[in-house]
Length: 546
Image (tube, rainbow, N blue to C red; front, side, top):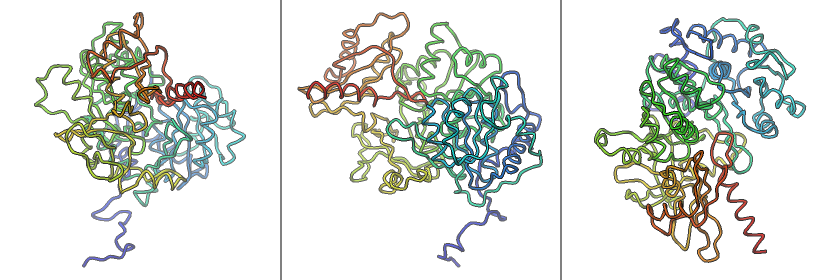
């Protein structure tokens, strides 16, 4: 007999036919199946899965010993080194919430995140401990500080060092404290490209499913060796912190993302998989070209972020990598869709393959729900590859909401979907392709011009390393495209050359009216800050008008 009573329908914590989903459970299985297998590599360090699990238990027990438990927030200001990986398992295990703080932020931004998240404990790597120490007096909610002494033995904060803190906790197994799979596992703060960073709340169920989904889409196995070029503070490393552990694969930690080190580790420890934002791919591509490198074996690379230029994809694949393009946001645990490769495309020309691979594709197996809709009517746009709408998503890997921000949460979930803010088309084969951010689209004389389309053309020029295109004011057309270009080392580019190049490859009215050479402003996660470029251009215009 069916019941409508919500209390009676609530799932138990565990029963003969139900077990709640939490990513902290993956480590137990891998430690049982692969106890002697290398789980973590960092420099000269090698730790097996049984050793990895013991350190996680010690951290969990030490946290509990310091009166940190269910519902408490624990902040880590730490690069991609073993303590950061251990925190992803230990903190949610005891029912606390992990707050991974971006190490590239300013002191004021770090202070805001630690305070806004209500962090009760702060763990800081000693390279960034001085920054935390400078704001310590303002962090009135923090009760415990721990120094992660990785670069040297200095302790900028008043508190124990990490290894001493671990030693204070026993290695006794810790049972998961989770009683509801929709409890908050982590809070990830957005880059804050406009306004204050927002705290995106992940639940255990979503993290579990997205971690599994990543491995399905990326073809990892127990034999995989995964290099941490993707920040663990960004969407919890797209949930690979848990997914690689689930597979019993090997984590290779990397303190700094330097192309020379990346290629060195690919060769020395046999890296098979890594994730990289387009800015990292650009650096890897340039380094390989300058040093005429070829990869010693096939390397699987998953990329997401700003749409990668087909040229960059082709360059990386020409040296032996295989690129998988995914798409997502912090609000959906990292990637939500994948450009699923199909065998019928195998015999296409390399550049055509690269163009197909640059699409954002179809929803993950575990996500399922993604569409392109008219944001006003919430009706799907025609699948014609031409009509633009907004990418919307829903499913298990959509955030719970923004921490302590119900109004912004409500706006993001309008109409029963998460609104991405990305403008896209959907092709007849149901593959999505981003055309622009809503705020970036250029409307010139009534015509919509995609900045991404112009950027992709410019990336095909051999002397262009990086590029960003924005709308700038124009007395006749209202606004026109302007390209900001970072040239390749040693090139002697001229603006007129690039404008002519664009006119030869896209409709002439879409070609940039202005070109400026120089470095590009970026967020702490490597995203180009177009809003800073826009602010300068439009402020200069306003001053001239007024």
